Image (cartoon, rainbow, N blue to C red; front, top):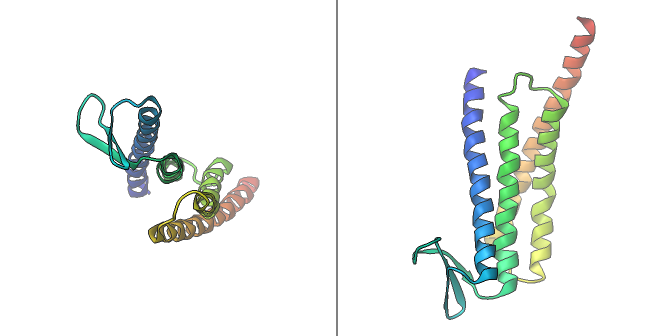
Length: 169
């Protein structure tokens, strides 16, 4: 179990850092777009530079629906994804695995992965053209959600057995 705890702690740290990086990127992109700072306009593109430099950081189409539905919505969605994924990894280095709190983390993760990608694609399709790769990513999230659902059900069974065992001691 020590190897699992170690790997989970490493993955927890990586996914938590990724969540923060996605959040900072989304906030910086939105701030730059709204305040028009660190932006260069070239034709139909807006290039957002790294802070305090002239080096390109983000290259975006120069229209608001693109900003909202092809940049901000995916970036903030992946912020949520990596934050929830870090909570899933956190489950596996706790002293007690089978708790209602841990099952709650698994449940939130699988519900988000089962339903949110399809909802976001449906919403975005009214405003922008959806590329085929996005559907593949949504299917991968669906499979990930199903896999974590199965793990959640195993945790539910483990909690039930643990509670029954506690009654007998």
